[in-house]
Image 1 (cartoon, rainbow, N blue to C red):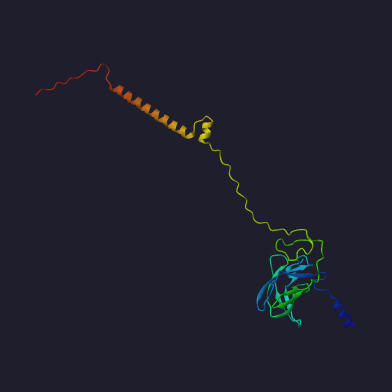
Image 2: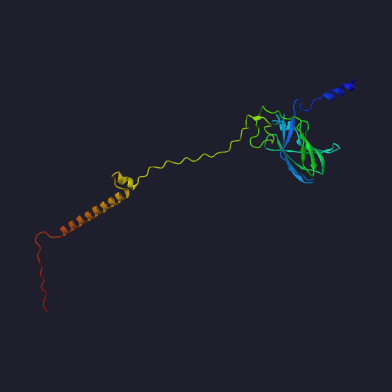
Length: 238
């Protein structure tokens, strides 16, 4: 009786993250995948199929991709977080064969993605939780987003983009008004270069006049008062 009760409780036990679920959405894969070749695959872990996980990365746990063979034995490839919310990448090297491809979603259960034939490609399976058409869905990503977005819904709010650093354009200084020779002539004034020449010429003329007056004053002072007398010198004849 006690063992039966314990078994019933274990059978009823909810998943690790009760009341929530997630899906894995793949970025486009190569059309053909070969055995022994390394491929980097991008994928998205979307809570409720439409948004990033509400908790922290530590709370979510490890995500990745897993291949499972016919004997239910599989290999898990752990992913690495990318800058976009809910976006990851993983490098996989596949052996030949036919494999079930699953998304590993941390605290959520695994997500069946399809049947992968190597060499060959992926045959997707219908999603376990298909998105309901219509309604509204929030855009958390901006330019890089899950391939299926907006899942037949209407996006209502874009994720705020980080503003790019902008450099303010320099404000040109207002040049001082220039006075041209033509403008001065038109207004009746004398152009500046011509005025400078006239000033220099007037100064030179004044200087010459002053020097001439000084010389005349010296000549007048050297002449004796009274009539000039002729001096005759008679030399001794030979």
